[in-house]
Image (cartoon, rainbow, N blue to C red; front, side, top):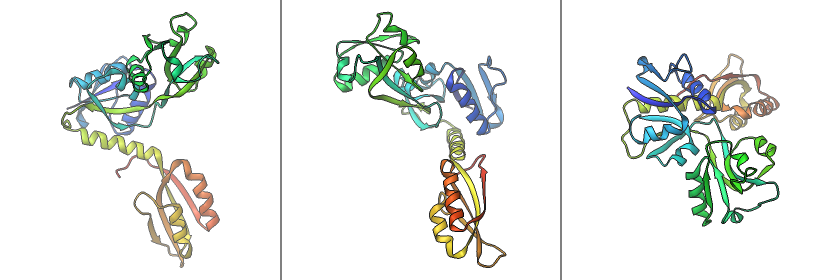
Length: 281
C-alpha cells in the first residue's frame, strides 16, 4: 500500500483533503483520526503536522507527502518536490517597522526573527549577508516590539497582520510557496505512485480548464480555432444545418468569459461551458 502523509491541520489540511477527495480517495471521517485506509485504491493516509511531513518522507518512513514548499526547504530533509499542487500559495518576505529598513543589505549585523531559520540562513548566505537569525515558533510579528529582533522573515498572504503590527515588507521575496507533492530524494518510485500522481494532476487540470462547446459557420472555423485551440486540437463535427459545425475544446477557466465574447462576435452561437470533474491528459 502507498503510504501518504497529509497535513492534519492548518491552511494546508482542508485544501489537501478536498483535492484527494476529488481525486477519488476516501478521507478520514473525523479530524481526530490519525490514519485512514483506502483499501480499494491501495493507499494509506497518515495525518501529521505539516512541518513534520518532509522529515517522515525524507527518512523513508512514508512514501509520499503533501506539504508546503517553505516547510520542505526549511526542514532540510532528504525529500524532493515532485509537483506543485496549486493551492495554499504564499510569499515569504522580510519585514520591519515602517520606514526602518528598505533593502536586504541593511540586515547585516541585525537580528531577524523567524519560524523558518533554515530558509532565512540559506537566503542570507546566498546574498553574502551576516545576520543573527532568531528562531521563534509563531507570532514573530511581536518580536520587534518586545526587543527580541530588528526585523522578521515570515509568510505573507494578505499583509494585514503585518500592517496591524506596524510593519511593512521590504526587499525581494525570499520564496514563493504553495502546497507541493514530495518524495524521498534518490529513492525509486514506490508502487502506486504513478497512479497517485496522475490522479492529482487530473484534478489540477480539471480546476484549470473548462469544456466549451459552440456552433460556428464553416468559413469562421479557422478563426474560432485560434481562440479555442484546446490541449492538443479541438473536436470539429458537422451539423445537420448546412454550412455549420460544432466545436468542442478545453479552454482556460480564467479566460472563459473573454473567449465567449470573442466567439459570439465572430458568429459563434449555442456557446456552452461545463465544468470538468476529472480527466487524463
